[in-house]
Length: 344
Image (tube, rainbow, N blue to C red; front, side):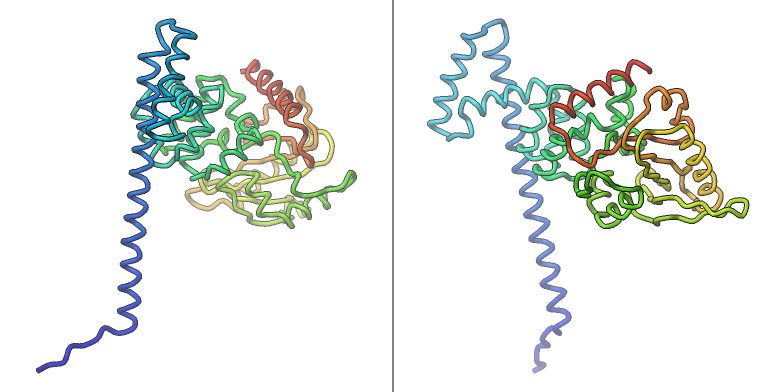
């Protein structure tokens, strides 16, 4: 009688690994299904309440009915259906009226994500954060941080007319294209560098290199560090680019120059020279043309407008080494958005 052969240690390790994979995949699938089910339930409840109670001019009477309904549901199903929760569900169905969109987003976003999103006032702003959450798999904590830092208002897309901004968001949704307007921001908040009141360009660059991980996170997903003080020899003269980055989604080299003080017109010519050199000597097959990013402590709005930087593939942004009070930042960004949209 032949004796049974015991599996080798390598086979046992492979077996355990395979079973772990099956368990983890099933757990993830169940969690997604539960999350989608709960989210769609809250949307359906909000839609029904909206249709049956709050519409049709019932006003305060409708709100009183909502109080009564919440009391009955809370007794049976707990705090998840109290007055505040039902109010959020009604708001959820109002700002996201299409079930198909909710079902798609709920595959990636939890109800806690939606609670933050439905509190936002502008539809375009809400759409921007929802898509960024879905694509970059932000946690609830990350989403809250991005909203608090006013990422949407700092993004180039917020300065575009609504019709153009929606087109760019549509491209992001179908996965066909990531555009510079979705990548670049203004201003960049570099408070993590802990710079003192007076510092030089070399101090700024050294601080960024020391905090490269945080710097790339502030720039946004997709940026990768390539080189510092990139040497370029042109007509037997040496030129040095502060930072050379690469953006994976855009498939472009990004030339980044750090400047103290206000933006100067001469910076455009300098950056154009760097971009053409990179195009000639550093571009790989399949890459798009390099882009430039000039970071200054302060902008010169009229100069930047006249130079038409975007037409040369150059982007400008201010940087802040200290985060100002939120209301001050909000006013500054709101003013910049209105001015930019008025120029389109």
